[in-house]
Each structure stands twice: as C-alpha cells, then as structure tokens.
Length: 162
Length: 278
Image (cartoon, rainbow over all chains, first blue to last red; front, top):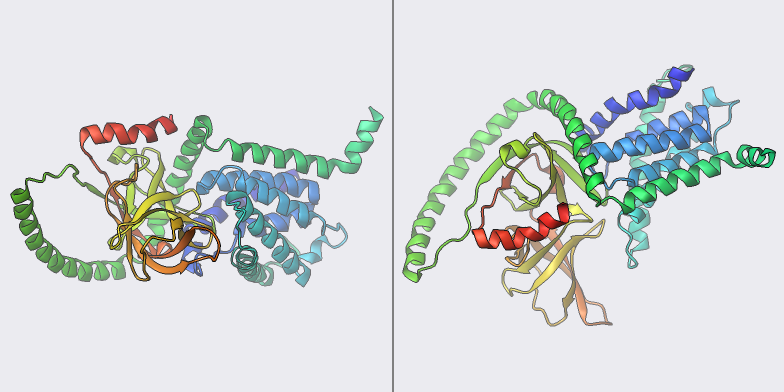
C-alpha cells in the first residue's frame, strides 16, 4: 500500500518526458494537455484530499524544476487543483469513478482552475482581459486535457490502476 | 492539547493546503534569489541530460526526411549566400569610404531544441548546448526568420531559452521604418509593444526589430510585423500588437549569437546583467 502511494512520483518521470518531448508535437496554437494533472487527479480520487494536496505540491515542484517555469507556480496550482479534486473523493466508488464521466468532469474543472491560477500567478496584470483569461488560457487547455483524459479512461484496465 | 488534536482532525486538509500554498508563494517571491537560481540550474541540468537521451532516440526516426529538407535548404541558402557576399563586398567598400568600423563580431553557435515546455505564460525550450560551448545567460537565440528568445540559464551541457512567449521576456525594439522605440513583452496571449505615444508613426505591416538600446540584445534582429494598433479613446498611449516572424511552437533548430561586442561597450552593458545574476 505504501509503495503504491509513491508510484505517482515514479510515474512522473516518464510522463514529464512525454510532456516535454512528445506532447509539443500535438500543440494547438501553443496549447497542450497537462498530463501531470491527469496523474494527480487520478491518484487524488484514489487516496483522498490530504494525500492529493501533498502529491500536488511534490509533482508541482518537480514540474517547476524540470520545465524551467517560475519556481512555485506549478507547486501552487497543482496543490490547489488536488484540493479541488479531493472534494470528489469517495472511498465507496474509488474503483469505478475512473471509468465514469464524472472523472472527465473533475479533470475539466481542476484543469480549468489549474490553468487560470497559473496565468494569474505568473502574469497578473490589472488590465487582464477576462475573456482571454477564461477562454484562451482556461477553457481551451482544460478541454484539451479532458480529451486526453478520456483516452486514458477508455484504455485503462477495468479494475486495476495504470 | 486535545483541542489542537480536534482542530487538526477537523481541518487538517485546510491547514496543510494553506501551509503548502504559503510555501509555494514564498518560492515564487524568491524565484530571482541567487540560491534558488543555482538550485534550478542544477536540477534543470540533470533533467535536461535525461531528456536529451530520449530526444536523440525520438529524433533518429525523422532524420531521413529532415536530411532531405536540409539539403534543399542548403542549396537555397548557398544561392542566398552568394547574393549576400556580393552585397557584403559592396558594403565593406562603402564603409571603408566612410571610415566606419564594425564594433561587433558575431559568432553563431548551432543548437538543437531537445525539449519544449508550453504554457500560455511561460514557454521555455531546452537546448543541447551549454557553458562548455561558450553559451552564457543573456545571449540571443535566433533562427533564419528572427529572434526566438534569450538564454535564461546554462548548465555545462544544456541551456534554457526564455522565448518571446514568456511573460518575463522584455526587450527594447524599434520600428525599422519610423525608428520609434518601445518595450516588447508577452501578455500571456499576445506579443505587444505597450505605452507607445500616440504621436508615434507606426503603421500596419511595419517591421519590428530589436533596438541597439537594449542592454542584452544590442544587435538588430527581426522580431515581427505590426499586426494591429490598439488606439484607446482615453490616455496618451497606444498598444501595438506584433505578429512574430518565428513560429515559436514549430522551432527545432536555432543559433545562439555569441556576441563579442566592443570591450568597453561589453563591460558597461553586461555589468548590469552580471550584477543581477550574482
């Protein structure tokens, strides 16, 4: 059980490599899906809110270090995203939630919060265009991440995890 | 003690969340501190080493088609070089006539992008060349089309580019036609020159290049063209939207301009950058 809880940190390494090496080939006008967020939400729904918050902080820190973004920005947004995803944790439906459309809804919501929070932290400007913030920097990346999550959902094994 | 235990049991998620968010904010506020920069350079170097191995494997498959493309490009460039050589000779002759001496020499270091990190605000690329090849923070990164960004930090074998599409990227630019100058920056969705006086004579389609006034990029590299002029009814300033020449998302190979400016100019201008990076 304890080893299982460390697994997402190990999965992070191949995922971040895919994120920076392969995902850029599928960018749409600079918008890319966030694979690390999918991993984070998946494990938060499995082990609960507190676990997710700590995992979000660790994965965020690793993301900041490996991508060269402002140190602390991904830490902040991933921690916050995991906190929100944690509200949907229910130990009675842990095994089935990954296969339900609710999973995609949670991914969309957390991805939206993640993207908007990231833009606000990294680039807060009093003259921010709210439409651009919501649509270009929020909804579009969230939709893309949700589409990728749906592929993960379809191909994930029925009763086991990754 | 029991009260604290109860509070912890009831609000532990919130307490941990607040603590971790505070730590994150602390890191954000200290991101320019030298110790944080050193830590980032070390970890970035280690990660770039791993990603370069996988990048090599991934790129091998595309080498054949890339080779053909490069051969064609090579032939086209050869023709271009021939033409430029003629202009160069003519230029030297004219300069000699005017007794103008060049104070700057360019050295282009070719490099390959081994990984890309996209986000609306902070697009950064990792290069397969570092301080061992003479690359230093602050050097300009270009392609045949124009400026891509600047070197943010370098480890021995790798470097990180802060691209034009990074909110911390700022550079003094000028309109090649009207010579008006302004500061170019990325807003998160647009590349703009902000707070330009309404009296400036920029027009749609004007070419924007880096200005000699810039303390980091003192050479005129093409940036893009004026796409839109936002002229608010109130105030004295316009914002100008720029369409970059370089398609940042598609860039794969770049050149780092290892500029060796005039000695005195170098010591005066780069002192500012060095003192900020100590």
